[in-house]
Image 1: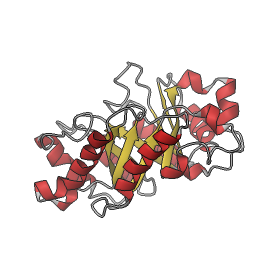
Image 2: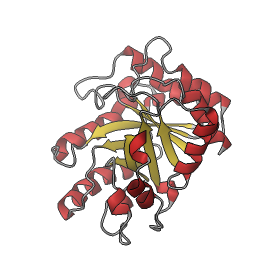
Image 3: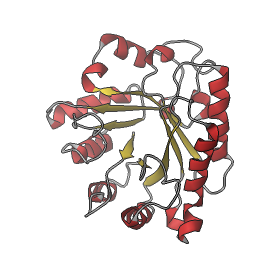
Length: 257
């Protein structure tokens, strides 16, 4: 089991140290982390000095894979703008003269959940731009529609979704209490034939729970997905802008799973 971490924490004053400490203490846990300096790559300029200092440090850990953040606005954003953002990430090493500024792929946020041929072609074009570029080390693609539980329940999910375009799809990104809903659980734990290694679950607003209960939640998520992230931050639009008090315990639970 591995961690998919939205690393939207501003990297000033050692703010990323919890990640470095966790990666060092748990070398068998893989971290795929999403860097997001300007709700994207800072299209007109390089990121500020704090990002330029910290992003290369991610490359010093063999178990950390950095991805660049690109939002598609549910495939309504102009594809040329998406292409420009992908190319900006790809060119970071050249523009900074630092090979450690290379990211390994792209995290496409706000991707559509309902299938259409036009949106499929849109995402295929964007995803192939990553897949075909030697400037991304792993050419890794993640899609985040946020919630496709209804689609997962369909037997032809791979034919009528965008899941064959990505390495990982975030099938559920919601508050913890919605995870507990019976319909959600039934859909996510149904036998769809989709490999767990292609699925991720992100839960925020986790209540104050013991380490034993956290272990149980991690085991429960593992029945659906091989990638997860949990946080007890409850403030809207702030879920991923800090390391929560449970982060170290989360990594320990994932390592133990």
